Image (cartoon, rainbow, N blue to C red):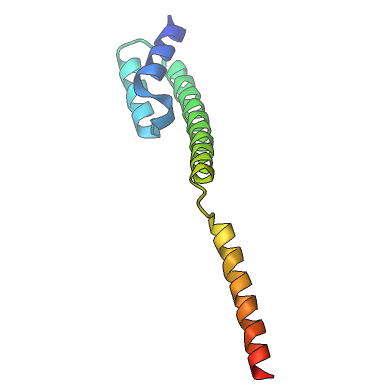
Length: 102
């Protein structure tokens, strides 16, 4: 029963976006209603925080991959590529100035 309750809470509040305050609020409600003991409530909070952090990390990785894929599809220059072009332009300017000064 407790496992089912945990799974319902995970699905209902979206583990990727839970804050510690919200998790503590849910824990307090469950303890007050007698659904969980205080020890179970602490375990519940710890478990939810771990799952929330993991889900957030996975979401961030997925989003990063999606953005990188879209940049490649759009054939946009990355900041590293732009920085390299700027470096090359500066080198060419130095070379041109040296030749003009001869």
